[in-house]
Length: 327
Ligand code: AMP
Ligand code: TRP
Image 1 (tube, helix red, strand yellow):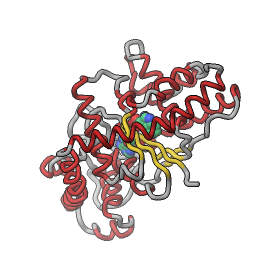
Image 2 (spheres, protein in one colour; image 1 turned 90 degrees about the vertical axis):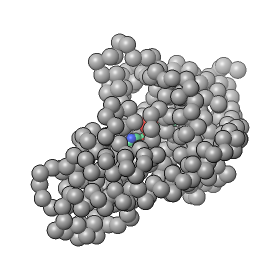
Image 3 (cartoon, helix red, strand yellow; image 1 turned 120 degrees about the vertical axis):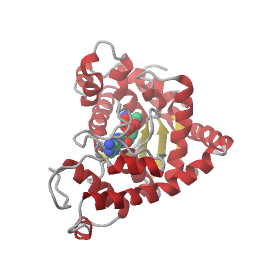
Image 4 (cartoon, helix red, strand yellow; image 1 turned 120 degrees about the horizontal axis):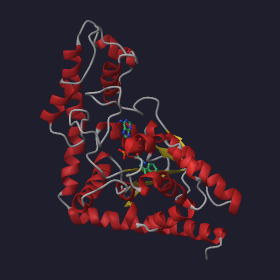
């Protein structure tokens, strides 16, 4: 029996190379080894304001990007979260057994809510319970994500354990699958912060659909430091981040990269990184354009994905309802 994988990305803002290197690329790498479900988590996106037409379009865009990056919808289930109502139903059931204190400890909520704690939506607070439902409905063993999501997966285990204790064995306890390198790509213009879709500054993230010109502009202006020498020094945040991106896209080792850039400066590194990023994204962008040129094909993939996901999740939901006394 193959182990099961579940993961997802929100269709809010533009997907960037942090999403690719921290998450989607790793999904593609393990695709053959596991049974996979990949979701476009649009119900997570509506925990902050979204323009309906934009959300609808972005949802398709993200699904197309999954496929352009190498997710094969024949092999893996690809679907849109809101097309499968079990996610909403289980969230409400798990809300009944999740203490407020557990959610109060979530660092992502604290960061996102900030000073606005009283005015952000209830959904933003409850977001990790929806995420737990996503994962638990599919009996996922492994959840490949960037390191910002590990706390949510720990919480998912706690919720599953509590449900199993209260109502009998129902849910499998999942584990995060986080790579050592690339789990936290930093913003180019502010390398002490993670690269993010929601950042106000467009210079922080290289988006997967950026033109070569935009990629060049962003990387050439990336913040570094006044020191000399190209080395993987985690204390030199900006440089370390550029070198990490270089390492992941080139497949070279750190030693090889350091000797390659020996005696060279930032300008040289940045120029080579621009070429590497442009060439790495080119095939993805080409496939993306092909997929988007056939909107009916994409709709068919998502309809079929929702059917397959419903079969799995409905069975689990039914079991959970039975155990809770809801049937
Ligand atoms: P999100 O953009 O919050 O929908 O995240 C989607 C996936 O990308 C999750 O697995 C995140 O952990 C991952 N991710 C987001 N930002 C980064 C980043 N800067 N570096 C590495 N992984 C990231
Ligand atoms: N919360 C995740 C993020 O922002 C996205 C997500 C929602 C997810 N449900 C999930 C990731 C289930 C993995 C598994 O990155």
